[in-house]
Image (cartoon, rainbow, N blue to C red; front, side, top):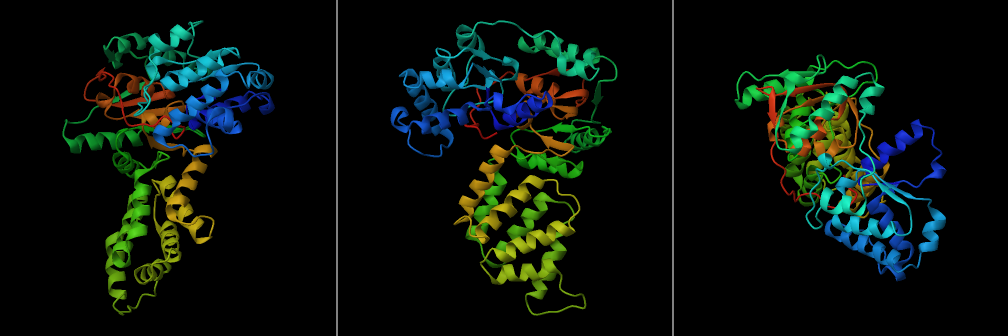
Length: 446
């Protein structure tokens, strides 16, 4: 069984476990991961030597796997290893992945599953498949699901059927009328005006509104282009921000630790803490440390954080950095970027413990481990369609739906099985036309 992302692998593994399917009866991986394993197992025949592909290099991996299979050298191995191939989320495949799968289908029964309305990934170096032109011509349509099973299982089939009914208007670039939704499932939060201040207030109100039952989950779907916007919203509504694996803010912080010293380094550490947690109190802390650094000693004893901060100013080592971060984590209020702070701390510890030679290597290892281990989401999370696609929640809040393209809007609308709250001045939603995106790599990193 193959899918496109490691988040999808994690979700499928959980569902198979729920169904008590023996894990020895299947091999579950991303197309990228399986292709790399296969190619590296036969390096001479595939032409791929050991390497860790990044961004545009993934197309070389798919080409190597295709070359290996096309030559027929491992056809008997494939047939002995697998009874068939099932590929989920096929709408997210690239042309090079699709070309590989077509070759695999010559040797193994292959069935692909997908929904072209959920195709939201864009690829810089390898275009995504066109459902009608590429996919259906290679794998004829067998059946379309007509029953909204996810909603039916939780007793909300009316919501599921309404979500199925909005597909046709979306496909033709039409509108969605929220007033036609069944009662009790969709709530519209109207801002007092279109000013930025009123929109922010409405977003916060909507994010705090859903009341979660025991073990229920909430996803707030916000701007997919900005980690900063999502983090700012998460800090206000007591949610945890879902971070992309290749987090820009982590890379920025690692660079600061490598290049800055003294008070500049301390400033960057404190700002990083502010970006991850509420209640840090950066200014009074920095003011007091500034005075302490001159030799002043007040009546109040030196705190663990202050002692570590003074060491940061006077040392280029990483030990005081980790002590300061850990002390701040203990005294802060709400860690709304928990994943980001955890990744930074683990990266620093890997270098301190001698397990990695430098911060760049350590951060790469931490991120790579996260890719393969899956992620445990908080009960209340903020994310983007790119980060939550394929995941399921009980409740969803969608802010700024007017900024979403057609496929993004459909993905956002179908994340929750119980209630959907939408921030919009009007009940008529008109999605933007889909553009050719260009910002996501074709590897297995989401």
